[in-house]
Image (cartoon, rainbow, N blue to C red; front, side, top):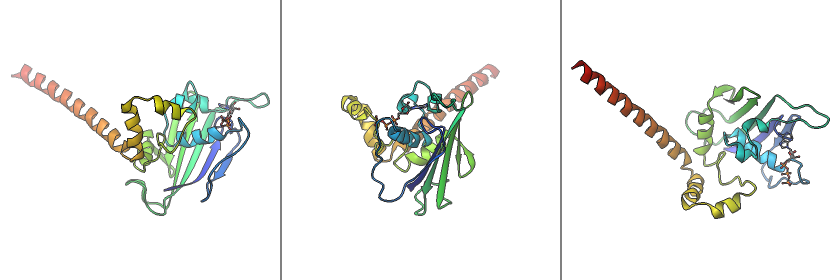
Length: 202
Ligand code: ATP
């Protein structure tokens, strides 16, 4: 899978619709301080399912919505659309029936976030898994936030191992194991309840 296009509307400083075509050979984005270079990277992370406001340099997720400027009112929503070239059919099962994938995430004030993949409503988890299995995604070590290198140096070994696991593309497996463990725990609780009922009836 290859990122081919990133479109932003009302996301942080990108109040007007902005279209970034990601062609082969693009190696950097340059511009003066404060022009929005980091916001572009954050848009990429956000559309792939980032749910920690701190990773977006904000206090709450709605902080990604254009907050207004002296000459322009604040916006009510932000939207990021990421297009992927899937012509090599490397997307995980469930997403692999098309040469192009388009992931849309939109956040509306007081309503929250919604995702679509190729026009179909999707859950945050599905989008996160799509990227986690491809060894990329919101937590990918390929996306380096400001301050992240010093965080990594000071991190506990367990957290540092997590970075290596994400790089190896096994982050999705850990998420699935966690979900399976929760299901198992629920089932055990239900079984214990059934035992209680059977005991009462006996
Ligand atoms: P530097 O080179 O200094 O790291 P940069 O090009 O990476 O800068 P960003 O940090 O991406 O720039 O952009 C910062 C700009 O985005 C600031 O002007 C800030 O006011 C603006 N900004 C951030 N969040 C919002 C928001 N929610 N609404 C409007 N503007 C915002």
